[in-house]
Every structure is written in C-alpha cells, then in structure tokens.
Image (tube, rainbow, N blue to C red; front, side, top):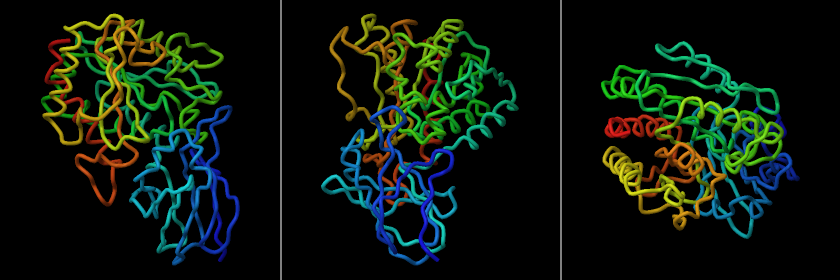
Length: 371
C-alpha cells in the first residue's frame, strides 16, 4: 500500500511537494488572500510501521517562525486523542518524525476543532438550562455567527473566541467555560445571579473551515478590524460590535493562542486613552485571583505594554475597553507548552484548555461583585 496524503476536509491544510516511502516534503498553504500561514492539519494513509519524516519546507516564511523553536507537532490515530511527536526546526524547515502503528495517522499544528464539532457544540449549548441563542448574522461564506446569552445579573460579561481560526485552543476553552457556567457549582450559580453572559464560541467560522491561521474568507485579520468593521470585509466584527452596543460591556475576555510564547498569559488594556487606576486595579485583582486558582497561568511573560494612550484601538481588547469603559483582556494560550507547568506527553492540550475555561470563570466569581 502506497503512502497518501489528504487535507481535503474541513480545516485541512497541507500541500505535498514530493517524496516516497516515509520521506516527504510538504508546504503549508497561506490563508486565502493573505500572506499569513502556520496552521497545518492533514491525514496520512498507508504508513503503518513506516518511519515517517515529514519536512515542512516553507516553515521559515510562516507568520511566526519563532513559533517553531521547541515546538512539537500533534499526532492522533483517531482524530480525537492528540499527543506530541518528535519535531525539530532548522534552517527554515520544520521536520516531524513519527512511526504510526496503524495505516492512518493525523497531524496538526494543534488539536483541531472543526465545523462539525462547532455545530454540535452550538446545538448542544442551545438545549442547556437557562441558555438563550440567536444568530447575529452571516459570515462572508454564509455561515451563522452564533451568540448565546445566560444569566440575569447586572454585570455584562462578554466571552468570545477564535477571531484567529487556527487558534483552536480558544474553542476548546469555550467548551470548558460553558460546561462550568451551566453546571451546579455554587460559583457558577453566583455568576449567573450576578452577571449576564454573552458568548460567541467562534468569531471566524469561515477561516476555521478553510484551514486558515489568522484571517476570514476575505483574508482579513478580524482582530485588526474593531475601529471600523464593514459588511464587505468583516461582517463578523460588525455584528458583534452592534450586539455589544445593545447590551453594554463591563467585562470581556477575547480568547486566543500564541505561536511563540510558551506560557499562558493575559494582554490587558493599559495603553488605552481612558485607562485609569480604578479600572487598572480591578483588572489586576482579576489576574491575582487567576494566579491563585491555577499554576496554568502566569504574569511574568507576555506582550510588551504600550505607552499611555498608544494602544491600537483596532484590536478587540483595546476597542472594547475604550468604547465601553470595560475591563477587557486577551487571553493567550500556547501552541507549545506552558513552561511554568510543562506536560511532556501532550504539552498544552484540549484538556488544559477546557480546564482553563472553568478556572477563568472561577476567578471572575471572586471579583464579579466589583464590576
């Protein structure tokens, strides 16, 4: 049986340049209409017992080549349980080595969260007690942009994920967050009483289905559209901003993944013109509670903080904080591992992403009465 490759499925991304036996050269396909690429997801058939050496030859030109250092690709024999495998990066080439036990093996940049799972998640969430659902609008490819509402408290809390579709850990986080919020835990009950939650589990379903790293169907980075979204370029942001204007926003988490930094961290709104000590103190109080709840978070490593008044207001966290005078933040999870609490077999994973979704809300329960 000869070795074959396939990425002709939802979220798939790879091109075969050539090879034979277990030695193959591959390339990642850029996002449509964009120079961005880094996400890969493909299946190999007919490889049982072969020592596969897969060379992604264009890795050096990817969006974040620093993301390949000390990175380990994910593999799965069933497209469900994902483990790390031997991976190295040298001279612009990412080399993945693996010996599959069975004929079929899946490779991905991170554990995928495809459109079928997204729709199943949406349909299940619609049935949960107390959960309301509406479609905010359609994407450029005609997909639904789903919004869920839960709770009846005064504080307006927005949670949204996957502006960058290749950052699939963000929707795994959403699964954990929603499961906790709708459960019987006393902290969840207190949150539903104190706040109303507005949840968008996937801001970019088109890019997710197309196998994009960072952009929507038009090749637009949605997290640079918040200053002036349009129907032609970024209807996803336009729809969410309109809904936020209807509800107001007191607290917001925009959930992401970071290619290069091997840590879980937050990026806040410090550089916005309306930043003040009172809002800064409440943001810090939330970070302190998150630190207290889990070792899967830290505050030493992260992005540089912009100078006062110098924040980019086209980015979601800054735009929401400024427009609504909210406590807003961007949560970043790693594609590599959380080096403060490393896990050698799975690195950062589905399970840890889900758990962090719960933990972020437990930390919010500690300060929600201050919003």
